[in-house]
Length: 225
Image (tube, rainbow, N blue to C red):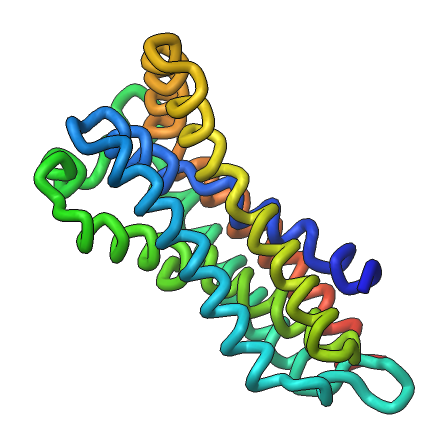
């Protein structure tokens, strides 16, 4: 199982670095219902990653590896396709980044986040993790890697759980600060929010491109072996 976990650590880190969901959570925590909606958002995030990964594991099963413990061809093809998608989108995002970070603007719907119901907050967490142009491909690629390791089901679940925990650290960090530091959390979270809002596009563009190249390389290695 250790080898499978090692293969997905970089992908999990890529999911964890998600500026816009972190900004959304910080805004949620600043609302009157922050103590309820903040954990709900985080739960939706974790649930989305776990569900998406579980679906991919169910598709791959324990037959994702060949008899020689080499990843199956479909795993290489999937990584190749996802890598190309991420790299192309990263290049596009880089071209669209604001030249002056101070001019970066958040989505307009975030202004109304204090009026979101708990159900909408839960759904928002799900969308940010499982229906996201960066996180969805990375989670699918991670689950495919776990499947291709030829592990028994309990170890596959353990490897996926490790991925989900690491991939959730970015979202769980502001929630932990909010719950543990009370009034002192306002300044800390405010500075995090401002930085993430200003650099969201540039950070995502770089992540898309770098992780896309990694998946491309992994895919080529599998197909060429």
